[in-house]
Every structure is written in C-alpha cells, then in structure tokens.
Image (cartoon, rainbow over all chains, first blue to last red; front, side):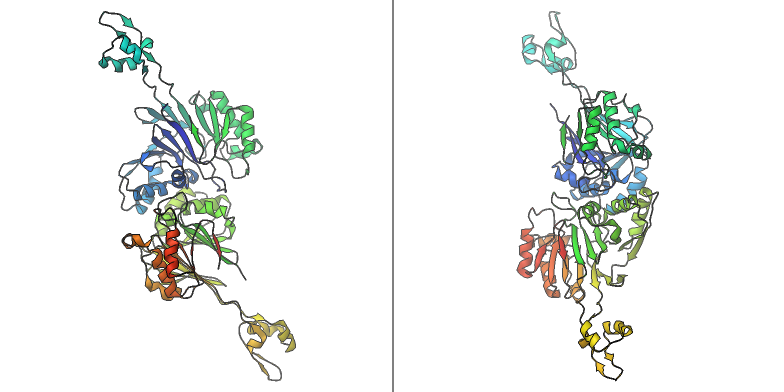
Length: 304
Length: 304
C-alpha cells in the first residue's frame, strides 16, 4: 500500500504544558508531506520526527490563533537556511498574508525561495488542493474566528492488472492503460473479456479528516462520513462542557458523538486543555460513545 | 546568599536539531526573572523549568534574528491567557517595535496587559535597566546585524552589622543604616569606632555576562573583566574557523581566549551549530585555553 500516514507533532492547546506542544501534524501521502497547522515548535518536532523538509511543499492552517500558526516564521527561516528553492504554499483563512508577509519579509531579507499564501473563505467547503492522487477540501468549522478543518482524500487508484490473464488473452501493451481504468478488452476475434477477469480492484481510496478548533458541529458529519481516520479536537472533559461552549471548543464525548454519527473508522482526539494532567479521562469519555478512539500524542505516527 | 542563577532554556543555533532549542535563558536574581533572548519554544522550556511566569517582567533580546526572538509571540500570548495585568518590558535593538507590534496586535486583540518595547542603540554600551539590586548594561557585539550582549551586575550590598559589637558600644538604632553603608560610629564620648569593627563586609556583588551572537571581539574584554560567569557563543569548532568569521560567529577556543583575557571565573559556551552531533569537541577546544569552561545544555541551571 502506498504510504498514507499521520505524524502528530503537537496536540496541546494554547497554554504550554510540560507534556505537549501546540497543534501541528504532518500527513505523509506517498512521501509528499502536508503540514496541518504549525504551532510554536513545529519545526523542532518535525526534525525530531525525522521527516524530510525537502518533501514539504504545502502547509494548511486552520485558523489564525497563535497556537496554530506561531511556528510558521521558524519553519520558513529554517527552510531558507537549508537553501530551499522550491516554493512553499501556505493555505490559510483570509488575512494570513497581511499579518505574516511583513513579518516574514523582515526576517527573510535574503530568501532563497518564495512563500506563497493561498487564502480561503472559511464559510463554505472548497477544494483547495489537488494533485494526481489527492484532493484537499476545507471543512467549515465554528470557532471564535474564521476556521476550517481539512479533508484529505485519495483519488481512486487504477485497477491492478492480473498478469496471467493479460498474457492468456495476449492483450497488447497499448490496451493496458484503458484496462487499468476499467475498460473491458475485446479480442481480435470479437470476444469481450470483462474487466474484472483482467484486473483486481485498486485499494479503496483513503480519507483523513482534521477538525480543530470548533464548537461541536453536527453539520460536518455529512462531509466526513466514513473517513478512515478523523482527528477531532477534544479540548475539554464533560465536566467542563460549559467552558467548552463558551470558548467554542468540543468535549471528548461530543467529538466521539460526531465520529459515531459520521461512521468513521477511527477517531483520534487531541488539542487537550492544559488543565488535565492525564488525558485518560478524555479517552474514557470518548470511548464510552465511540470505542475506536485513541489519544493523540507527540511523535505518534498513525497509518491510515 | 540571595539567588542569582541562570537557567538555560535553549542553546542551539538557528537550524533545529533533535537535541537543542534555539537560544533562550532566564536569569533569576532574587526571584525576579529576566529572560535573555527568546527563541522559538522559549515559553515551553520556561514552563518545563518550572519557572513562574508571574515573576517575569523583562525580556532582553540581543538581536533580531529569528532564532533569538521567534518565541516572543507565543510568550506574549500565553501571558495574556494567564490573565496577566503587569506590563511586560521588552528591551531590544532599534526596529523591534516596528516588526513585532503589528504582529502582536493582530494576535492579541483582547490583551489584559501591555507590552512595552524599549529600544537600544547597539553601537555603545548603555545602562538599560536598573533596580535596587541590579543593573543591566549592553555589551556591543559584532554580528551580521546590530547586536548586543548584556552585563547583569548586582549592586554592592550593605555591610552586615555585628550584633555583639553594636550592643557593646550601645549604638543607637537610628545610626545602624549609616553604619551598614560604611560609616564609622562616634560615641557620645567622642571615641571613633571604625566601621570594620562594627560590620562584616557584604558578599561581593556578582556579575553575569551574556555574549551572543558575535564575531570574536577582544574589544569586549574590558567590559566583562572578572565576571563570575560568562556565557559566550561558540558556534563552531576550530576546524570551521573560516566559516565562523564568514558568518560573524566565534569558535570555542576563541570564546575561551576571551574568557582568559577577561579573567572571568567561569565560562559557559553555547549557540552550538547543528553540524556537531556531540559538542565535546567544542568543550575540549575551549578547555585547552580556559579550563573552567562548561557546556550549556537545555534545563541546565547554574548558580552564580
């Protein structure tokens, strides 16, 4: 299987603790790296995870709170020191360029590469990235400021050729691409060989949804239905539910409710409030609603 | 003895490594905390060191390279989340307010306290902070941009009264302050009791000098003469001396030469280049010139 794995660089919330870095993750899709949020220290954790800076071309920022983007200047500077020449694309809500560009310009007077900001409107889902094998779509969330999650979806792959059958029917090489994409084969004698005799289906395309920060938002369920992995913020325990609504955050059991309603395969919770010395209480509350829940943790790597 | 101790929060240079945070230190002078440089992650390391945010009122920034100041936005935000009301004073070279103020304003729309920037000219030594027990003076350095080190000097303390002698001569209470400050006592009979019969000397005032980043600068020797502890950058080993001059940095043996010339009591080296997997080579080169040298390290705490 092609690589599709998630690295957690930080899963705390805004107040620093001795255990967590602020939010940042890296999704590795076939050795292309996509950073999701970039809290302070993201570049340090990136390095610690032994990920390759040269494989990183896109950073997705959910919203412009410091604990989700204060790592950007350090990351940008380091890539410059490493002599990067490829453009770095930063996808973020409207306003990111206005606040970051002058700051980055001051500290990067001799830049070896360009940082390009791509701003999106957080009010409706939009396709913001696409390549041969992946799409990234925003997931509108509800926070104290414009904020979106992100849905990373593999494109359906081509079917796999069954070599023996292709040899048996003496299928010419120039037909193979059509067959991989689902066509039947017609022999010179006019015999139709159905596609499913010549191929096995590709692995089903995988999906990863990232939802942070947000008030519990049942409206997102439709968009994240059946994803292989959902990361959802679970800043608070149920006892602090009033605080969660006041601050536009989600409790662990609310996050699990979203996962259950969307029928996701697995749920990972994070963005833990500094008030919990041990997040097991969050895990237990979530698992009571949705058993296939795990706790995020720095340096955790999850195969999707 | 009153507290005068140094906490190393980060001692790497600009490129992140798995072992070091970028530069930041905290000097604890009688439970007042003074931060020196504020690289990315400084607030996380501060928290990890179990230092108290409420005791921090002054941050001193040597120069405006990212690895010495990218931790400032995170620190400022966290103090705000903690509900701080006291002003935070940031002392830094000219230009700091222009680049940081708009950035901090954007991320701190509802600030509970004020950040005050105090800019200094890096071309000559100047007294930039003073309280009852401490002065801070800039140390002009030579780097690729305006840069200063800092000399933290305790003020001489009052002498200690020798209770038995004061009782013996029946010194009235209102004379005691004068005597603590060095005056002799004259009895009603006109007998002069010399101060050194009535007091023992205060502990000698302590000094800490911080010098980073800089080309090896013998010009600073006079200013840091005899300090109890010198932190000096030692970015490179002798084999990379050409690289050190090119980038306006110092080698370990050059740093030790400065320590020896200044007759300091102890030297601590840091700001290690990412190229050294093990800094023992730097330590050995420095100790060959100045034996009382130690390596800085994250979470190291040095009593001065």
